[in-house]
Image 1 (spheres, rainbow, N blue to C red):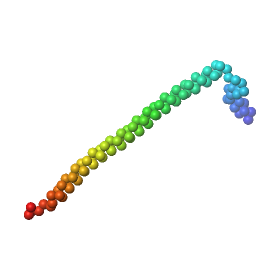
Image 2 (tube, one colour):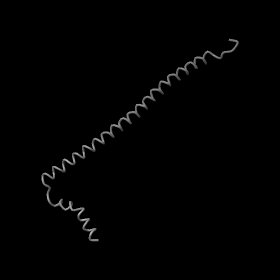
Image 3 (cartoon, rainbow, N blue to C red):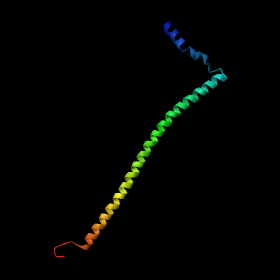
Image 4 (cartoon, one colour):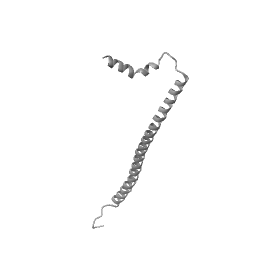
Length: 99
């Protein structure tokens, strides 16, 4: 049991050097600031890549909906023309052998 306790204390000995009651030195503050900036830089690069991929995916989806809508509207014009032809044919009357 003593070996476990001694080993555990040795593993976390570095924690004794950072006393929260003592103020940090200027070098320690500078190191923390640089480490935070480096972490932020790495994280922002990953996040930027994900944002670009998400933006492209959403853009492709929107363009697909837009293209389908334009295609559908153009099909409706063809249907309107067919309806006009049908109305014209009905107004002329039925074709029989007597005409």
